[in-house]
Length: 113
Length: 117
Image 1: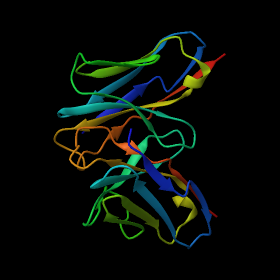
Image 2: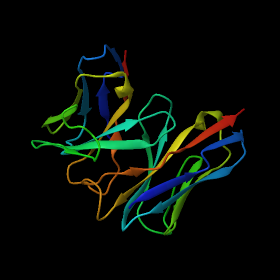
Image 3: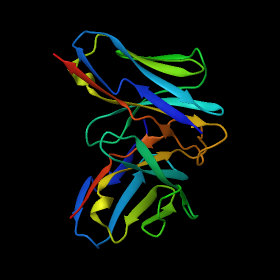
Image 4: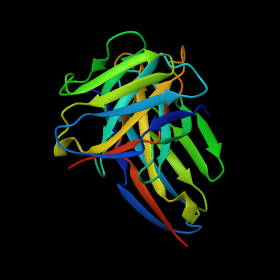
């Protein structure tokens, strides 16, 4: 059964204090790993897709990396506007409903000024 | 990125009534749309997969007679919560993937906060 586990559940940082969020996954065959940002009362906003181990992608202060078992979302010098819940999701080659994503519970990030 | 519009963003209804939520892909054709439900501090849980012109595929434990899904065109899917009860109160989110793009990101609507009183 596909599983996605995110840690920590919540993370509080001071502005400028870099850190990483973890996403561990178990799938039969990884088609893709996705990172989304979700603000309270809003739908998820797409950030990155990673397809194979060793792949990295960057966007402003965010950098996503992927290994065969986990993905990290690195946040460099975060700002208060980076506060949100970050969701990780995987898509399985063999299972799911026509490309369905399996989501983790998310990491709630709070950045204090 | 592609835009998915979900309407309404919030709705309050009386117990026993039905509520319809619309999900539209504004600038692309979506043969497949997904409907999720999210409880506070919980992950998005897939309810059903909607395919244009055919019956939706429901996940185990989701009542198909209660959550009616219609995907009448390549840009519109609707979720109707029938005979709503307070326990149906939740955040409902739709997502859509562009036609022929199974291994790319899905784009999400803004979500609908349903409160049944």
